[in-house]
Image 1 (cartoon, rainbow, N blue to C red):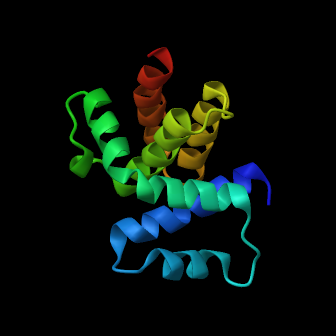
Image 2 (cartoon, one colour):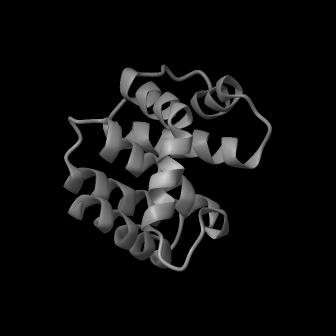
Image 3 (cartoon, rainbow, N blue to C red):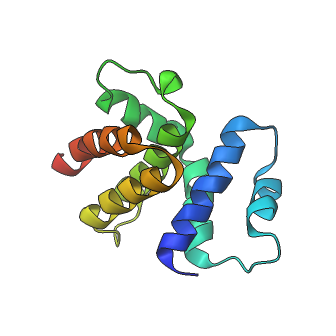
Length: 127
């Protein structure tokens, strides 16, 4: 699985977890169906869920005039994934993470989503 595809699938799994009472394994099963999982995908999904509290705290500090709960769910999900990569994955170049997050917003959100996410994540890359 390509890294971009793994990120797309990770966003879908994390979005489901934010909207339903599914377990992590059930959400993964819905997205992957019969497709094979891979290490990068699993690192993203399990990493975000394991570090969710720390990720959310870091996001709250960088949101201006917003609270995490007020964010549209797709933006919140993409931000969580990107912040996990920025904080916990040393091999992920921040420019790549930022670009991928913007592309994910274009795929799952709208033009405003990508601009908003870009602004929030820019603060993380400047720190």
